Length: 415
Ligand SMILES: NC(=O)c1ccc[n+]([C@@H]2O[C@H](COP(=O)([O-])OP(=O)(O)OC[C@H]3O[C@@H](n4cnc5c(N)ncnc54)[C@H](O)[C@@H]3O)[C@@H](O)[C@H]2O)c1
Image (cartoon, rainbow, N blue to C red):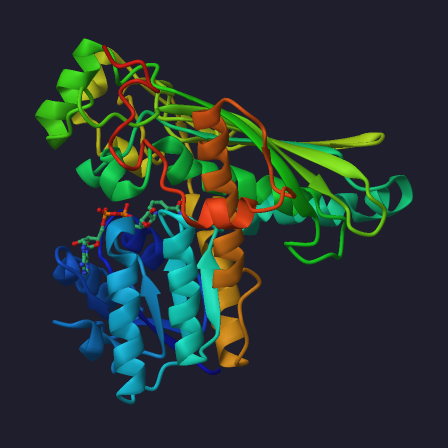
């Protein structure tokens, strides 16, 4: 069986998750890693888990010469710089077969366009990692409901939410580094997965045309004095000066280009979901049928009483972003599969070995960035953004939200 040797840029939270996902896949290796921190531990994991002799590299160029596909799994604020270094390595002869990038493709539309332009310079196939579209539950509902959709017509409303109690690293909280708050971080997932399920069965991911976006953002928990102090103490991020939203909700309206039918995607995201841990919720409603997913509904719960709580292992092994170590706890035994990390790498592997883009390429990532930024614009203006209006593409291209600029005290009502 042919093998794809993947090199990771970044060895943090998502790199560890993706490496775990790769242990479920045949014909794939983690052959190299380059990161500011964490490379040795990740390489050690790879070696111990049958992912190959992972080489720790000291530059992007060295990485590109020790793998078949590079995955950018580093923070949002170094994307463009890293992609530029990959292009240089390819021009200098690095024998790559494909480029992979985590969400969001860019912090602004301009950055995402630059990523697409850089990838085109290499002429290499691309994969944009939007894991929720690859969730086995999303795939299963599509397969199960395909005959119903064909008989009754496609879904008309999709709702999607991703929520947890807040990110694990300071740069996520800093809107000038991350590109915003929870809308930039997780709104991209929820918008993408709803768009995907609304497309009539058998159509490509960008079949439905986005026509308008409305949104609201709020700073509901982490702007309060006690929680602001916690952010400052734990991450050195000051929400009195550079606040970001911890709640976002909105609606994207799409139009079917073949028959003019309009359908809607409602998204909700928060960093103030103080419950068990990460929760993904999706539902879709068509005429006479529906589906519903809740990632906290696991066949496994464990109970840990107060007397036993001292002996608790790391709570995050039970659930991503777990917030509790005792009581009745939800455990997801295979989160890498549940969230779609396994299937997205299977797709990238197969696509690159066949010399083509994955289902979701970087151009697709650019479309998601546009929708996220349109949502920031809608929230900022307090208006519905009409994506069919003349000049809107240019306006979005030149747009950086007040939140991403670190100038949102008034918008987010920080006193
Ligand atoms: N799909 C998902 O569900 C999901 C989940 C978490 C994160 N992400 C995305 O993955 C990316 C990384 O997030 P994370 O949570 O792993 O972050 P992290 O902070 O945990 O890890 C970042 C890694 O990148 C390294 N790094 C930083 N700057 C670098 C540079 N200039 N060159 C090389 N390495 C560098 C760090 O040392 C670290 O190893 C982000 O873009 C984030 O949006 C996606």
